[in-house]
Image (cartoon, rainbow, N blue to C red; front, side):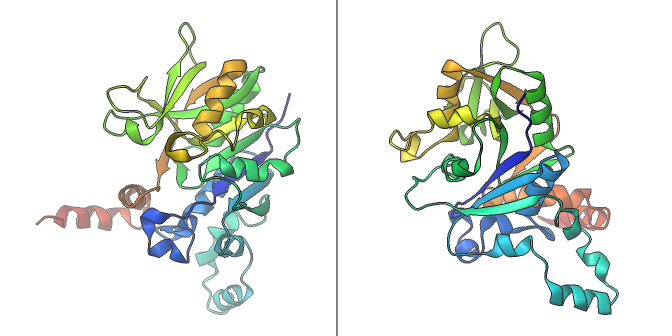
Length: 290
């Protein structure tokens, strides 16, 4: 059985919905209160038993690389002023896994499957791996751990696809799935960003996957999909024609930060869970509109 100990994190987008903030700062480094989005994604990998993490980034900025490195001046300042606890959260991830970085080549097309191709040379043909979008964060329980557990159960799986239930109003922003008739969890097909009236279901992918190397047989840069992009959805759809792709409905929550509105919602979600902030934030929200 292929053991999942490696993860690829896609952090190569331009974050154009957040311009001008993301002109010089990667979207994945924007904070959820006091912690960058990418921190939560890496911690999910660590909590899922991942030992090796490949973060695929874009050129022009080293902020993600720098974040997961030490900053001796800050450490010395905090030590002198008895404020070392302020870096406690950072040490949840520091040196807890081997993190490497790959620049996505300009020769690859735009699309959420291109980081997979960028990381391909660093994967072995006989190993399975997790794939995570860096603008989605897992809460309650690590979503990737759930997918790995299901992959270990399904001996014939080429892919475990994490899904969550969406509303008819929001399904058009996601890749909707259709489960094969007479099965509980086998993928029939997917539709990327379907019209609400034509969606095959309200179950949609949520940026969490486990793949075998076989997926690379179905990612073709000369055969682009919707909006002339290379979609993970299209690769999975082709994979499902010849191999077993299983769906897993995430028990916890996967929250997106992919646009300003959802960034605000996710920030509020974490603020309302924070024992130091929750009460004050609730009181503030009551005053809005007064």
